[in-house]
Image (cartoon, rainbow, N blue to C red; front, side):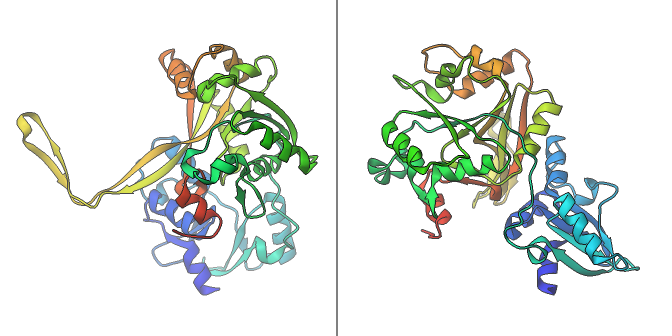
Length: 354
C-alpha cells in the first residue's frame, strides 16, 4: 500500500507537465497533492490540468496554482459504507482517508471495492459518430495487403470494434462509416457480428475526397453535434468532457490535441541578425500539441464542404479560422492517445514491443 500511495502522491511544487506525465505512468486520472511536510493538500484531476492548458497556462507552472479550492476526501471518522456510496455515485477512482492532522491514513481504490462487472458509469451522450475507414493503411503494410486496416485485430476484436465500443460506453450507437479500400470485406465482417449496440450506415467515395470531402455525402443525414474519428486512433478520455467543452465554448469544431514531448539530444541554437548567437539550449525537451485525428463538429458544417472535391478537414478548419469562427482545442496527455496505425504503436498495443 505504501508503494502504491507514494506513486500517487506529488509535491505541490511539481510542474503541471510533470504531473501529467505521472498520470500517464500510473495510468490514473487523479493524483494526491501533498504539502511540504507530506500531509494531504488537495487532489489533482486530469480535468484540473486540462482546464489549465485550455487557459493557456505555462506547463512549467506548479500544480498548486491550478488546484480547485475544495476537493472531496474522506475523514478517518467517516462511515466506510457511506464513503463507498459517495465513490460510486461520483464515479471516483480512489478516495484518500485523511486523519485529524491531515496525514494520509489510507486510500480506497475503486478496483478494490467493487466487482469488475460494476464499471464506473459515464454520461450518456447519444450522438452520431463518423469513422473514417476508407484508407489503404499503408503504414501497416504488408498486413493491410490482406486485411483492411479497420479489421486488424487488437486483442480479441478488430480495431474498428475497439473504437466503436468506446463510443458505445457513452451511449453513442449511430455510426456512419466511410469506406473505400476493401469496403465489402468490412461490411461483411461487421454484419456477421450481429451486435445490437451498433447502428451502422456506410458511405463510400467514388474517388479519393480527402479527410473531409466524403462528409458531404452525409448532407441532411446528420442533424446533431457529431464526432469524427480516424479508424486507427484510441483516445482514453471521457468523451462527455470533450462535448461539454465544445458546447460551453460554442465551438463549431473542436480538435482533440495530444501533448507530445520530443527530446532533442543536441544543443539547439537561436540566432539573430547577421547570424549572431542569441541563445543556446542544451538538449531541450519540447512539447507540442499534436492533432489526434479526433474531432467534434456541428452538423451545419457538412453543407460547407464542397461537393465532389478533394477536401481535407484541415481545409475546413482553415476556412473557419479565416472567417473568425469558433474552433476549440481540447488537450489530452500523450499516454491517453494511441496511434495504432503504425507498427511500433500497434505492436505495443497488442503486447509486443519492437
